[in-house]
Image (cartoon, rainbow, N blue to C red):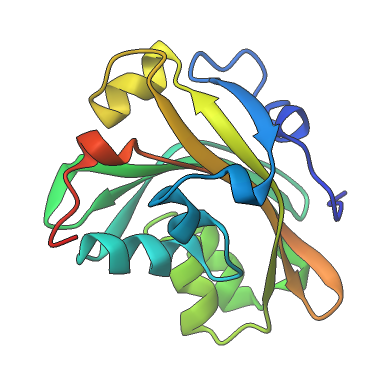
Length: 186
């Protein structure tokens, strides 16, 4: 069952023994440095925010998924469409498919379109509430995805996406380290 206050540990428990699990500590919003602050401390979909920052659409790559009834969880990478080797975000989500129309459920489970884009395209009622911000030291696996050394520092957030007053999605979002990510035009 989804909550209104998911934690880093709860979300990673969806995929126990994950070799990609980084070290993360919660920090306050004002402790998130720029440009990460601009990218994380808001109530917008991360897909839209990351695409605007990099000046490129992003594609989703599903690393792992599981489904039990209406609960669907997946680990993903977002990479720039124009350069699929440039991974700009890691995500881990748990979704209550029971709050989604059939077309939305099907598109989410298909895993070919970033979640934020699916929700926007289907005009699902949505409210995004960040519940925690994170300072992250990347694991060796995650560092390989972002093409940086292990233990490189980056930042992320945990949030809840609502449909009406009901939590529909719990999400962990970790950004690629910006200095190494080579932002386009920024």
